[in-house]
Image (cartoon, rainbow, N blue to C red; front, side):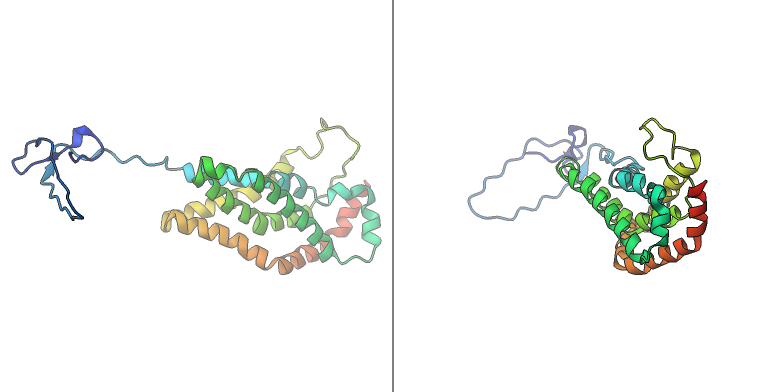
Length: 239
């Protein structure tokens, strides 16, 4: 046997600085063998590392994949009901419950995509790790951000329009998408540069977990914002 650093260009050298012949060891019982390596005939091969921004890419993909339906629905969560918004507006509805129903629907859509992607854990565990982090963040933070920003919607949709309709495809609507996507990536980058990859992932996922834990309080904030904006929303839908 011989010792190397992973390449024959980096073999262990003997005390005389020469490459020794093959070593032999005859074992007749349980033994502890200690071998002293004097030096190596080459510097260790360069350590193979992942691309510097691979984790950021995985986090970004996780936000997109687990939040695709969430973003599509959440951007227009009130606009979808513009044709009968006046009816909703006049009913004695606890809007906290109204937005809780929207929130749960967004969670279900995110969970559906997350379950579909679980087989990726066998292909690339690191990718699935960041998808999980992104999923928790989407559920606990981005869902509420989308609900809050949806209270600023004023555009009336024709729900009978075809899929090729340009409704909701303007620059302003995609701005909402970018606003909800960029902060976790920036936060992860900052924390990682100060501490480590694992701590950065824990911080991002921790924010999502905190949002889920305090979802009632966050839904009340969204409801109060809606109450301030509902007359403007109704006026916009009537145009």
